[in-house]
Image (cartoon, rainbow, N blue to C red; front, side, top):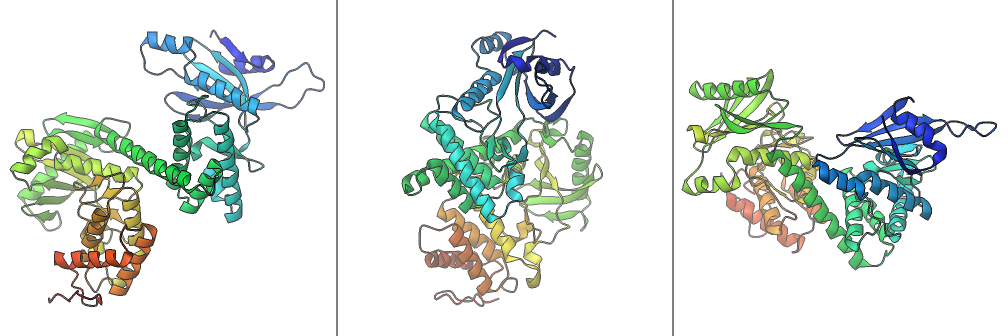
Length: 517
């Protein structure tokens, strides 16, 4: 293997080149399609007596992207590769005295680029935070915010800032790693996106609003500048929306988790965990169940939908065929997608947002074959349905967590009834084809969802006192533009107008009368 030494510390050159050639034992730390990271116990210079102890270093291999050869050559020639960006960033950080791995060498072979740096002894940041008490967590977040402020003051932007790219060393100092997307002349927009990415990562790993606000204050260095704090919060919301939207869009195309289907059964998508033969078996079982209906296999069959429980590939599945339609819906389907596709995208969007759902495993459109669109999902019917649960089994905390998770992430279910929620401690949603994802839900959409859920819960299931207490906690966590009392009255009036399971027998709000049975 021919190696081209670009830059670095010559005292470590022999050990680095030996590791690249495979002459030194290495330990794989992580690997993706484009990068591999190894730990190497490298030997320090041998011209000192007595010889110092062995020094550990990190060796990172960068594989080229799938680009034309001319473009790859141009990126190398102009030093615009990920390895070049990381090398320049580590050098700038070292000269500024900012805690980061120290760069040791940069070299190339015929296919890849390699960066060697010092090994930082420490724990992943999310593990350090999980094992810390409140005081330690606050101090660590303060130090992290100050570190981000120092980095940005030097004009450097990390470019991929999240808890996975943070270590906590043995002294509790946060250390930033993985600088391959760094920019040395960052704009205010770059710095804002850096902080938004990190704050979103805090929320994604379950750190509360107080932790995120503490980070924001320390990173901005302006604890009393409300405008800057609010601007940073809006950037985080926008970043979260873009992140979730990108993850949701991936469900429409082939990827590592799912693949396209296009055969005599129809066209669509299936999870790689569900074989093609299992998909065919499920479709045939669904058709057979509708031809010979039995109570244990046909869960629903009316003018709107036909839902069956089938077994395919050794697993229990639910097949849903939406049959409601009309001229308007048929004209709209080519633009918005058939119901099965909408359910597939909605389900995977909920998965991306960390919300419980009966995971979609396949969707097939058979309209071109004179058939229908069919969605296959996990069978969650072994879990209790919220609509049928006894009063003593219902956990208002679980309902509150579900509502906050949905509405904080901009999810409008479209038909949030208790009959569409399975599982009392960890709720999972079904009826996915009406889901919409927005950057921020307007008050009207939130009130409608609360009314849908409230109206679908019988009076005996949840007393009025518990319903009001749950609403007050919801409104405190996600305030409405109008006063909470006015919002509650709106929910009650909308619930009453739906004439569903809730009758308002113990509701004491003025103007709301109990509906007779």
